[in-house]
Image 1 (cartoon, helix red, strand yellow):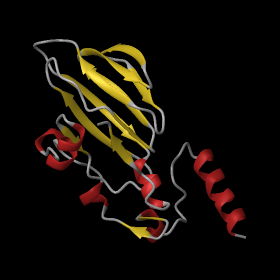
Image 2 (tube, rainbow, N blue to C red):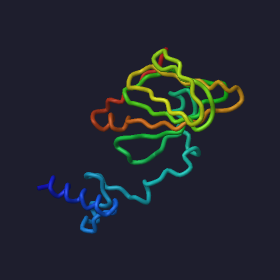
Image 3 (cartoon, rainbow, N blue to C red):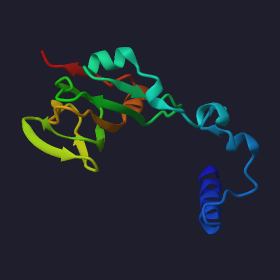
Length: 165
């Protein structure tokens, strides 16, 4: 019965051009599964680069800014590799997609050098050693990283991370 109702609900959404069916209760509109949230409080993290996470940055050996949002499956952060600098060489169980906002450099992923520039996306597979290098001596690199670490945390705290050395 529930599957039939969900199918009917999905069909109504598609028919109306992704406009939600008016028969859905207010409780459903304001919750995800059994987790309730205040949309006005958690729908946005304003000025992310005004809130550097000191511990996260120290572990990664470069400035990082974590988006503090209630996602249970994906995370996002902004990172900065200082002029001529590097990130730490590390690996983790979660996947990372890294979009270069500005700057030039390269990454070494499992021993393979991958050169990049603004507008490129780098993929760091699970448990692969990788490190990022800024090749410009007078300008910082800015990147946006998305991971599935929260998903691994929510299914059993299996989001291990290891630094080389």
